Image 1 (cartoon, helix red, strand yellow):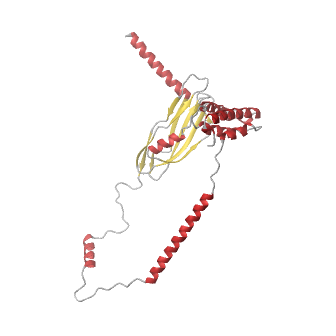
Image 2: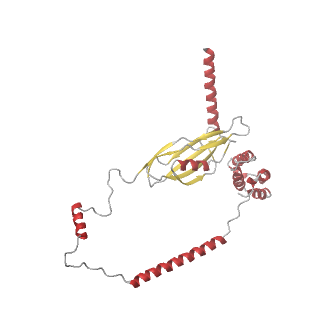
Length: 312
């Protein structure tokens, strides 16, 4: 009996330690603008993931859009905010990755905000493994603008049924014997021909406009896609490269799976620590150049390993 009790206590301690490690690695939060909206209103969501220093987060916005659309929402926009230093975290230097999402319902009823998940990569010197963080599910009530107990008002007044039946009988009755019904005047043929001619001319003008627009659209050349590998090579040759430009190109390359994805994510972590650290305003040009050269080397390896490093 004592051996069984000790085994159960050990399992409880292991679960508690694992939960504490996950909580220390990152945290997920979801806030909504309102718990009840009208069918014509929009709902604003604030999704935030707080990461400990050195941890990285995989791209999650596309999966969030799919989950919200599957729950019946129309996603109007997902505005991902730049990483910011957490002010209320127990771990100094933690970064908050957040996004403002605007959605709207289609019909009245009860909707849910599904759990939004993101994969967190621990720091390189950590013994923890990759974890998936999930925001809590929320229920939103969408109400109709029309009260349920109010009858619909027709645009035309409803007449007395008996009076309406008598009017219909008078209209359908035969004329008295020996009298003739008035014959309506024949339509003017000149006006009919004029209408037909105007419609034909309008149709010809519309067809000509469509043909001209189609030819003009074919002449417009699509913009050339950005070669992020070449862009990183140019930044590496610059005397004082822009860290924001390096971050954009590396983030685009890291969004696609590949053998160099871990190295790119680790480089993104270093970039965020430098850009949003206490010495962000006085980063030496030599340090900027070193980071740009590291990014260029990884990007070249990515280009050799497959088509993911080419034009995006």
